[in-house]
Length: 572
Image 1 (cartoon, rainbow, N blue to C red):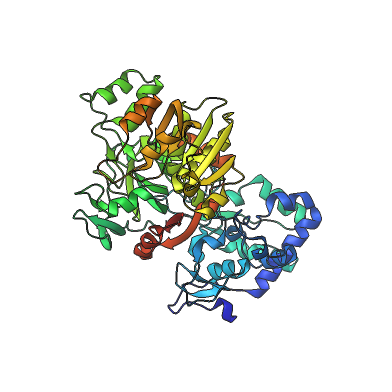
Image 2: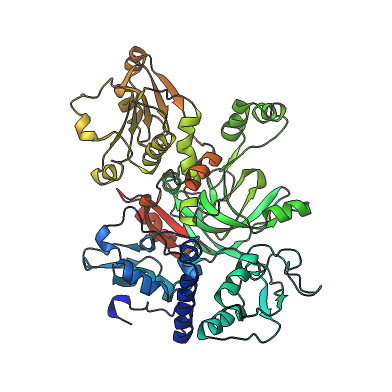
């Protein structure tokens, strides 16, 4: 191993490296390419595309990628967990080399070339690639009546009932792959898979497939989680938290990845005094268990499903005017939004009376869950909740065709608002992004009409210039600054979550401007997932770093630094 890719000091899980099998798999790919070049482009899993924010000089040449890819199993190349391996590496401190980066998972310093980073993850942290979740076994897939794979959601093992006939090294490698215990059942029973085998070699016969269910495992009783103690002290990572039990109508979710947002940092600063429990509300996870009373249809629809969730949990009490109005008028969009955002007795995940998601497991009502499209990787799915908050601006219909719009604040939320306004093509005349950080503003030059720093506002040249100003500063003075930018009769959309008890606004200025102030909080997650699915927004450039849950304190410290964008946690 080269010095640029040295292993961490602590022992790490290693994948077996079989050179003969790798060579045979490479031969198999070449044979398939010769049979159908177009099929190769469609079926072979390509290397995940580089981040749009990644420098061109850091990317590997095409020929090098082709030779390297042969040594990686397809599930590593087509992971649903992330896009860029650079997510797991941060710049070293002042004493580090400019040509090296530090792995957030093991703190090893390695070379900064893209392939070096991926190789390090492949060798020392294979779990972060997270192969695709197994599909349910089709009816009739097993060869006998006692081979049902449905055993408490555990993945079944697969074996070949008879010795296959291999006519080449490539076919021998294929047989070795088939004999492994992690082959998806759906692959072996797929007509496309059998057609491919026949095209590869008509003489090759796939033997009978027998599915052996794995024995049920004892469910986990305790879990790790990052907790607040409710007294304003720093959060602590605990390993003895009880795994929550889903109530009727709820789901137990195994958290895959979570995101740290500005509200989490304010919670650490005692934004909600007295909240004691697990922190965090941005997540993507897998449904592992349903609460008591769940029917067979619900079990089939939800178990193993990858989901994100809304953070507000309405009380749904008949005594609650907000929730009862939504129940009486299910087709009334205003009533549904009021229930979603404004139930006076609502709980909020990781904020008010509901444990958060910076833990291995969490529970949420099924009504709060949304299924993540297959094409959206975990690293992007985590953005669903903050992206939905940005979509709320569009849902409120305060922006009209021909308006001049300002987005005030270049934090994570402000940048997402700018992305959404660009993606929705609202027909505005101009979108101006205003912030403190030139590097952040530079990321958005292809998305907004123009960017402007706060220093450039000092001369008042833009005062009274905008029909709508979306205030995302998170600072007490943001509202007063936004009012100055508005035309007479303009709309101030207040998006900020601010820990300050009050902010100073010039009432005379507001009255003279005849401004309308609109509060704006959580938004439609369905719209956010649609934008991610259709790739109408680029959230990859906002991923600053990814840490394991074991280093959550370091992740919070980085997230709180000035100029840092999204920091995520790999949980399970």
